[in-house]
Structure formats: structure tokens, C-alpha cells
Amino acid sequence: MHLRLLLPTEVLVDEDVEKVIAEADNGFFCLLPRHIDFVAALVPGILYYTTGDGHERLVAVDEGSLVKCGDEVLVSVLNATAGTNLDALQATVAESFCILDDEERRSRSALARLEAGTMRRFLEIEKQVHG
Image (cartoon, helix red, strand yellow):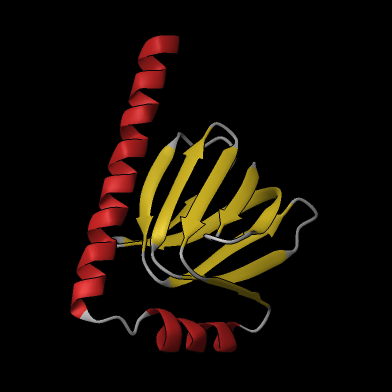
């Protein structure tokens, strides 16, 4: 699979991976190369991925969306920090990403649901066209 993690101003991750583990509202999930296409609204947390050479990488991510289509995995978030120390990254999530006022949280949640719904519809249309 190929993982791209996008921020508003940069591409933080752009590499081939064997596995991606992330968190949505209903808990953690794992994506492997042969899994079906998938769309999820991400919550602030730690995204784990295993590179093609077997190294595990960690990224603290803010709310956003994840789309797996074929062997492409696209993650789009407002904020993210890559690192190797799990404790430091969890502190970053707790301090930076989870401290949102209620209005901003509701707005961002609605936007994430809208993005996920839009991507789902695009995938459905593509399946109908190529079907």
C-alpha cells in the first residue's frame, strides 16, 4: 500500500507501507493491502504504520479523514506530529489536539463527516461507472 498523510501546508508522510492502524469514533482499526476500500473520520490519537522494510512509525494526528482506495491510503488532518516516543506523542495529542472548545469540535466533526460522506459517494460513483 502507499500511505500519504496530508497537512494543510505539507505532505508529512509519502511512502509504501505494509500496515496502517488508526482510530475512529468507534475504536481502532487496521488496514492491510488486501482489505476492502474504506473511509473513516479520524479522532485525535496515534496513527501507527509499518514501512515496507518492517519498521514501525508513529504519528500523532488531529481529527481528519482516512480513505483507502485500492492500494492507496490517503490521510488528511489539520495537525500531525511524527515521532518515535509514544509517551511524548500521547502528550502532544492530549495537550494540543484534544483541547478544543465545544463549538470548534462540533464544527470539525461535522466537516469530517461531510468529507467522509463525500468520499464514500465518489467511491460509489466510481464503482458504478467502472462497474
